[in-house]
Image (cartoon, rainbow, N blue to C red; front, side, top):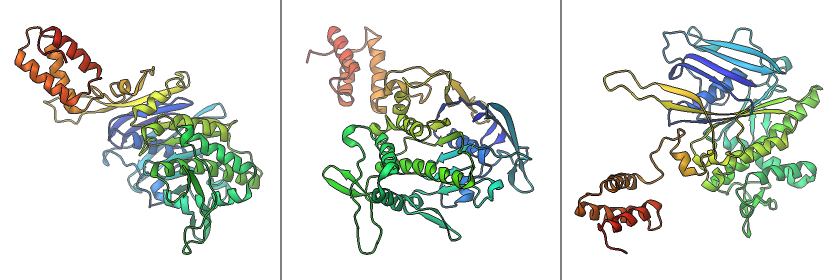
Length: 428
């Protein structure tokens, strides 16, 4: 498990220090704050390889460079392995223009990284450790490669979702039952659940038997489903694939399976409908518990959705979970220095609604209204605080509020009640 991370002169930050919770770490912050940067550093601290160096087709996961190439840059991280604490250290070597970690050995933790562009990276101690004859420093696949399979230097690294799922459907048995259970967890409601359909052939130009999903009364090929369905299907498949291939590799080597798992997922709500955003994190947690029931699991998840945060209000335990939030300190108007960015561990408590989370320290919005409505409401609040407010201006505000608010909005109802009592407007 990763316990802490400290950097000097790395990325945008002169200094960064963070302590991680042992179970769930939820990361929020404004665009460009450094959520993806933090994810990349967490991945590298466990694997010593950058995803884009393994697979240049990914759009994310590139090497992190010092903020100032003329100053020393370092990375220190804390680890908990088999209840023993240790630490690792790395520094940026200008001569090689790369990071080096003297004498640091990699651990026995499965490390999974879901990148923001939909790619996935895996570091498997059974298959990516030099002691076992390393063939690849890590496995990194784009969404298309996960779907269609991927080979390198004549070796098949992954058969792909289409072929593996077709094989599972043909063979049936316990493996198919497990995959169906995993797939079922990633649906927002009973009516929208994933149901596997029959294998079909799409055309004579593609000889693959194509898996389908039941959509209403139709069976739709997995190559034709929506992006949101595809994202969840890939996530379910990749987690299932990791477990199966790790288990096989450990059996071949006569070794024990990994006893810990670190799962990093950047922008978990990317391109998901709100109904899916509200269940995706809990679904992921339940799926991992199902696939790895006896494994210590640590998750780090970044999100831009208030629905993700509201979905874990009853799950979150401050004894083993953490909310980490980036914030930007206000810039001094007389200073030429850029506003500094901070990463704080904040107290997590139920807000009760997604609207309340929008106005929390996670997103720092004034309200959940449109900008136009927010501006008019601000003027209306000033009017409500002034009993001698000008009649003509109050009537103009009433017309503007009518344009931006529905007649059942709480503020509209409050406004009409006060405005009518003060004689500003006539009863509706």
